[in-house]
Image (cartoon, rainbow, N blue to C red; front, side, top):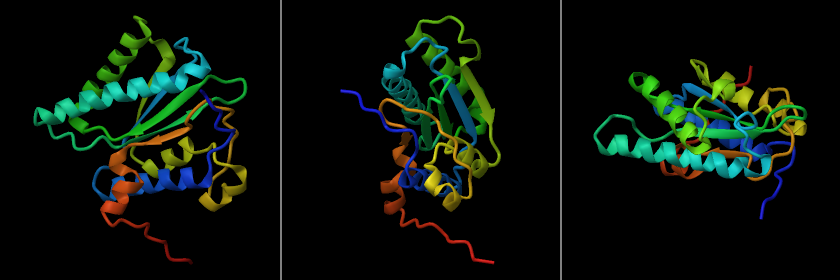
Length: 194
């Protein structure tokens, strides 16, 4: 059974994603790579996009775990993904993650390879894009622009309708998710009012 998640990210989803970004940064593991996958260009139907991306996420996290098992200093897989399908635009996902600097090319190659294997496409063209990030907060605002307009001002951002999405709209890795933050005793530091 597939369900639509509505046109907007809820305020709890957005807050948890922002908290995940801050938590990762404060732990010395800032998210530094934005991967955008244009699922429509890959020929995947919108109703199958969620399962398709879960498969890709799973393949990358298994590879990541194997690298750690071999003793490579990758650390936990810190990431979140937001699905979008704006009216008249492609169904796509923004996957914001932390990639070790010395493994950037290897991680990009691995993602590309996994996508080619699953889609059976020899060339992904412009369906896959990587962006190095040095300001995670700004990129988080961009990826979370599908926030419900009623709550946009609360997050100091503008809301943009990102269309209906079948299935889950946002996923946050366990390493920076709610439970991980609770275990670490982390809480959001409030900025002083001026």
